[in-house]
Structure formats: C-alpha cells, structure tokens
Amino acid sequence: MFTKNFDLDGWLLILAWHITATLIIFLFSNIHKNSSIYDPFWHVAPIPIVFYIANQSSLSNLEQSLVISAFLFWALRLTYNWFLNWTNLDHEDFRYIDLKNNKRLLAFINDLFGIHLIPTLIVNISLYPIYIALTSEDLNNLAYVGFILIVVAVIVQYISDDQMRNFRKDINNLGKTMKYGLWKYSRHPNYFGEVSFWFGIYIFALASGSTPLWVLACPLVMLALFVFISCPMMDNRSLKKRPDYKEYMEKTPQLLFWFVKD
Image (cartoon, rainbow, N blue to C red):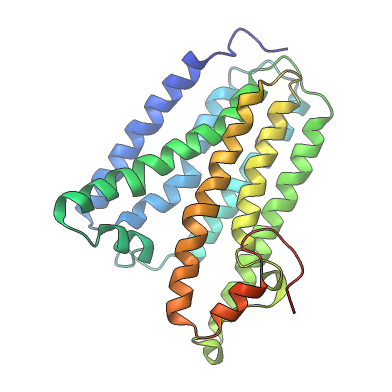
C-alpha cells in the first residue's frame, strides 16, 4: 500500500526544483556557448532527488538499499563514462550544434526546450516510479527483479561503451562502422541498457503492490526519446560519415538485441 505521501504534490515540488536547476545549467551553457554542459546534469541531478525522497521513506533498510544502490550504480557509471569521454569545454555534442544551427530565435527555443527543459522533464517523469517505490510502506519480491534488471542494464551500458571506446582508439577503424561485440546485435546497445534501467525503476514501483496503470507511461516516455529522437539522430550522422553503415543499419536492430540479418 502507499503512504499518505503517494500524491502528486510532493513530486511537483521536486519538479520545480529540477526545472530551476535546469535553468541555472542553461544559463551556464549560454555563458560558455556550449550546451554539452547539460550532459552530466542528466545523471547527476537525480541523485539528490532520490536521497531527498529516501530521507522520508518508511521502507526497511534492505528495501531502501535495493532501490538506492541500483540507482547509484547507474548514476555513478554514467558519470564515470562522461568523465572518460570529456575533453574540455570547447567540445560540444554534434546534436546540440545541429539543433542550434538555425535563426537566433529558433536556436534559442531549441536550446532552452529541446536540449535542456524537455530532457529534464523526461528524466523527471521517468523518475516518478522511484518516488512511488520509496514512499510505499513495503515492497514485494519484484524489487529483486528490478534490482537485477538494473544491474544487468548498467553492465550492458558499460561493456558497450568500453567496446566502442576501444574501437575508436584504433586509427585503422577511422570511417568504419563498429559492428562487433554487443554492437553486432544492436546498433545502440548502450541506449538499450539506458532504457532497460528506466524499466527497472518502473519494476520497483510495481513492487509496491498497487501501482496505477498509467505509471507505465513513465518508462515508455524514455523509450520514445531513444527510439524516435536519439537513435535516429545517431543513425543519420553515421550514414553521412560511414559508407558501410547503410548495410549495417539494414541488418542490425535499432535498439533491441537480436540476430543480424544475412
């Protein structure tokens, strides 16, 4: 059963904090003329949010530990990966550059909403199931399923990112498509791991025992972000840069792991 905290009021307060912090990041992004400053915010901002909720939780220490440790495993892994790939404030994600490559007003709108506010709203919506889980009186055995799914998802992210990093280090692979390891079965295995994490968070909510059906929309929103925006943007860029990518794209699933076509 849910505690009296299971309502939207508490989450709306968190949303207000999240948006305010995003606007501060947006200000710094404009000062430095680099919207990639937002990138680490994606996985760092949820940390204080989750700890704030946990501070009010009545779950047992074991149940809290399952939820929080799985979440931190994801957040710290993404932060570590960002640190490995970060060069300096001069580098900006090509997707952000493309979105801002417009007339001044449209560039401002794309920057504020497309790069900053909308991703924050998607993360905030996708985090809502963890609010349900942590404000519940107890969790059933589905919590272990959610924990295992998240651990596996993060490991998939780590392996796929590491494989891509090693592939790019070899100058002989310049202009070639990465289609080995996990990348043989998915064009975006790292994104598959990311989406799986958010479904793991949803399973934590299911473990509360009476999660409303509409909460399924939370991880689905994140899935839609990758299926309809992130993956296509990466695919389109690769099609322009790699002559063998079209064939790879035709044979390899976008997100889900599956056998490649002959």
